[in-house]
Every structure is written in C-alpha cells, then in structure tokens.
Amino acid sequence: MTTYGIPLLVLATTGSATLTGLAFALEWVPRLAAFTIAGTLVDRHGTTAVFRTACVLRAAVVLAGAVLLAIPHAGVPPVVTVMTLAPVTGVLTEVSYVAVETAGGEASRAAGAQAHRVQAVLLGIDQTAMLAGPLVSGLLLQHGGTTAMLSILAAFSLLAAALNPRQSTEPRSATSRSGASGLLVGWATLRSLPALAWLVGGLVVSNIAIGLLQAAMPVIVVNRLGHSSAEAGLIWSAAAIASLLAITVARRAIDRWGLWPVGAVSAALAATATLALSQADTYRTYLLLIAVVMAGEGGLTVVLRTLRSHLIPPHVFGSTLALTILLLLAPFPAAGLLVAVVPPAQLGHLLAAAALLQALGLAIALTRLRALPAALSSPA
Image 1 (cartoon, rainbow, N blue to C red):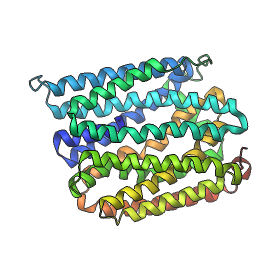
Image 2: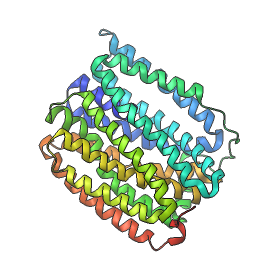
Image 3: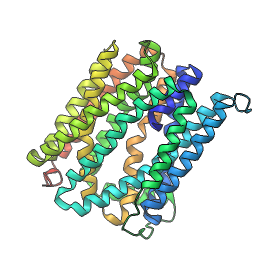
C-alpha cells in the first residue's frame, strides 16, 4: 500500500503527472539513504525491535497525514502533506523490510538444503501482500477518499507491529560502528562472492525498466488511457498473481534443473514482455504484459534470495543484505525523475530503451554466472 498507494494519492490530490513522478522519486531516494543504517541497526538490535519501531512510526506518520488532509484549514497545503508522506513512509518501510529479510535469511540457513523452498514461501507471502495492497489502495482512494486509505494503512502498520513474534536469536554484536562502515563491510562481502555480485549487477540494470514501469503506470493508466485509480491498482494486483504462480513454478523447477536455467528463462520472460510493453496502447495489453514481466521477476527473485541466504555469512548478513537492496533499488528514484521530466507521449520510447538495456544486462550477468556452476547448482 505504501509503495503504490502514495503515488496514487499524489495524483488524486494534485492531478499532476510531474508531481506523481517526483513523488515516486522522493519516495525512493530516502529509502536508499535508510539502507546506510538499516542493516547495522538490525545487526545490533535484532529484527523484532527494529521492525516494531518502524511500523509504529509509520502508523503515526500516515495518521498525521490523514488528519491534515481531512482538515481543510489546518494551515498545511495538501500538496505539501502528500509530498512529505512519500519520503518519510519510504524510509520507514525499507527499515522494516531489512528486518524482515534478515529474519528470512535466518530461517533459510536453518533450512539448509531446502533454503530455496523457504525463500519461495517468504516471497509468496510478499506477493500476496502485493496482490492486495495496490488494489486496496486504489479502491479505498476511489470510494473512501484519502482519509480512508491512510487510516487503513496505519491500521495495518500497527497490526504488523503487534503480531510480529519475538525472534529466538539475539541481536548480533555490531560489525560496524556507523552506517557508512556497515556498507563497507557489505561491499567487501559482496566483492568476495562473484556469483551473488553478478546476479545483483544484472538485476540492477533490470530494475531500471521495472522502476520506469512502476513510476509511469499511474500516468499511463489514469491520464493517457482514461481509467480509474482502482484500475491502475488492479494492474499490479494482477501482476502479483502472476508472480505468485511463477514463484511456485520456480521452486519446483529449481528442484529439478537448478538455479541457472530457472534464472535464464525468468530473465527472457521479463525482458521480452518489457519490450512489448513499449508498444502497448490498451489497458488490457498493459495488464497482461506487466503480469508476464512480474512473473519473470518472481523467478529471478527466488534465485537471488536463495543465493543470498546460502552465500552471505551470518555475522555480516544485515549489512550485506542492506547493500544488495540499496543497489537493487537505486534505479527507482532515477525512474521517477525521468517520468517527471519526459512528456507522457514519449514514455513508450523511454520504456523501449530501458527494455533493451534490461535484456543486455541480464544476458551478460547470466552468461557470467554460468561459469560458476558450483554456486548455481540446485541446492536440493
């Protein structure tokens, strides 16, 4: 709801495609900054404390935003409120995300040879939330208004904090004394793991195209195609269904053929569908092709998370995880800025260029990965 609902909120409040793209960028830039400290915080204080704190703070922020938007004469212009929500909720969401992913890494290591199955289940939970989140955001915004959407988002944040179980593992002793040194630890670890480094590099390039799709979709669906906010949210909910199916298939395919073939097929699906999207001109076509793109991304993510849980040493897992996520998310604010400055009529050409770059980056990464069979063989 945070990732897709806030840009929809900006578009509904301001009616501006430029501000929507800018909000997407503002949502992601602070998220990247959050990773300079999030991994170190998790390594020091444990997943439970960090996750609960981030969720409670996010609930407080969005409730404050709901109150300001509901009171016309509060003294704060609505555009200021919604543009402030984007960066603040972005930071808190990513801090909680690092905590959850670290807990998932611990579960995967405990599973040993079944780590890819654990990661597939965890990713399935994520995608189930991604199925509901965009659709719920769009429906609430369309039928209940901004106050209803933000209030429900706050309720889910508080519920997550309340239900999060205490982890059995104790916080690790800090491997670094600052966010910067924590990233240096992560960088040194990533450089020592060529299989993981090549895959992360390919996905960084791929995420340029994915970021453009996410940032441009509200503008394309609402402004260019003339559909509602709820229908814009439905696109990403349909994509989440496709990703869920792909995750299930990928788990079984890895059991049979190993990580590299699954990664190659997933990359081909994602790149081909992104290129076709640059030529799409109907809502139904966008819905179907984005579903295919995210199915490919789902398979690639299972491969990435399995490698990550196997290869990163436990005592530096939080710092290295934070660095990999930081690298993977770096293209998203750039995508928001591009959507803000590029005329809507030229977005198709921009997507075509990004799709070609995506195909090239994934091809190079997977070609290099094939030379590392030990790291990419089936863990089963």
